[in-house]
Amino acid sequence: MAAEIVNPRSDSTTDSSTGSATDEPFDAAFALHRGGKMAVQATVPLRDKDDLSLAYTPGVAKVCSAIAENPELVHDYTWKSQVVAVVTDGTAVLGLGDIGPEASLPVMEGKAILFKQFGGVDAVPIALATTDADEIVETVVRLAPSFGGVNLEDISAPRCFEIERKLQERLDIPVFHDDQHGTAVVTLAALRNAAKLSGRTLGDLRGVISGAGAAGVAIAKFLLEAGLGDVAVADRKGIVSRDREDLTDVKRELAEITNKAGISGPLETALVGADVFIGVSGGTVPEAAVASMAPGAFVFAMANPDPEVHPDIAHKYAAVVATGRSDYPNQINNVLAFPGIFAGALQVRASRITEGMKIAAATALADVVGAELAADYVIPSPFDERVAPAVTAAVAAAARAEGVARR
Image 1 (cartoon, rainbow, N blue to C red):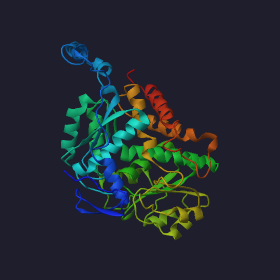
Image 2: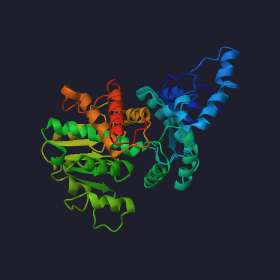
Image 3: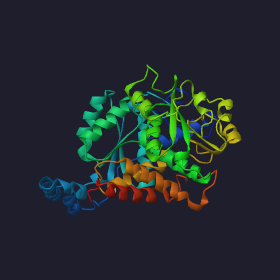
Image 4: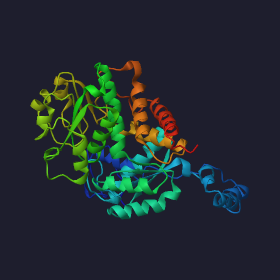
């Protein structure tokens, strides 16, 4: 067991859990995470033998028998309808990469408490000791009777696409890969408001996305679904285009629906005259490339902790600037989306999360800004108490409209 931190306010100390010197910010982080960030709490009293006989045996047998006769009652008499499994294999954690299941648990716990804090949804972190796609699918399918939804988290591409698809095919509860779809929803919301601020529509815009991983692919598809004029996606080897012979199956599919302009070559080539830059890759975009974008462009540089374009540089050329950081305006933060999306889906016992539900979430999120719309306020704060209720209601209504709601 790691020793307690003796003086978390000192400039430097040695933490026995790491065996290395840590500075003050790390000391505070270790202190907060010690013992984990969440716990199970009973929602019914256990004061005496009568309470015990109702909560457990013999009273529980009546409820079990009723569910056995009518399985739908599980939603009414257990926590199933209000709890999500947060599932990872630890292969693509934050900016840390493949760090394994145990090391991913602090992030999964964090995700779970965000679900509760911002959406009122209970969540359980599940870190799996396998990276095999089929094994992950089989494990989650077997766990699914305990949960009302599955949030896939920090699973590397391209396996994440296969895992999500197979789970959606086999389960009748919502399956949502937040690294893809949560990012896409919040990006669309911010882009809608940026376009509105400049008197344009999505159809007027040509975008460039840096990064062809889970987030980049999902954002590209989602923005096109929502009506974006065109978008080119760049990976480490340049623009994803039909003339490239080194594309994976996912990128070949992407090449068929993006880059109508037929641009090839490096990212910088696509940025010439572009209206939108969306960064989900890390790396650095040269200032000259940003300067080559169209007048009144939008720069959403979302890599953490270092945006692909520093905001000071972006503001020289762009009308609207957004990042993934909380210390700058217009933070593109997934917590604006996933708690409300799941809350809405669970509320109506949706069998899945559709494109229409995601677009409804983005629209509701954008609408929260309302008359306060400004260049430094195209997306609300995660702490805006209007966000989760607005997204929840919009998603629930869309689920009913699309016929995937069961209540």
